[in-house]
Amino acid sequence: MKSGLEKYCYKRLEEEGFNFGYETQTFTVLDEFYYEGDYHSMTNGSGRLIDKTGKKVRGIKYTPDFILPDDQIIIETKGYIRSQHSFPLRFKLFLSYLSRNGMGDWGIYLLKNQKQVNEAIQLIKNERK
Image (cartoon, rainbow, N blue to C red):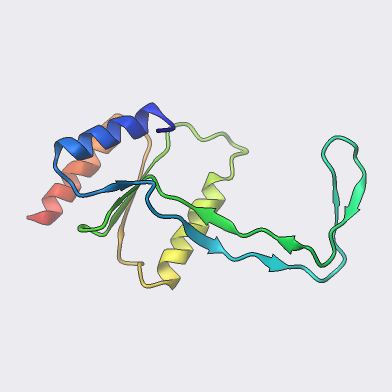
């Protein structure tokens, strides 16, 4: 696992007996495409421009940390997020993907610390009653 918070969440979900998977599904939130207009991009290091006109632009994929399929819940554990990190944009694209693909009613939990993990688990357990 990539962080201590992910390990903690995994352990707590196991302790509570949830059916869940860790990074079991990757979603393509933006398909690859070709840009046919003039497209020039600077290379790393040399500062030269490269003609990328008509070349493939890679899609954007998103893999949530935990999926609880029985409860229709997705849990994403993110501690500190650097200001220049791509996560906020990718997460918004993921939410848009869920809405467009019939999963807009799934519960989403974006957790930043152990206290929030515990609170989310309690909320999920309460929903089951």
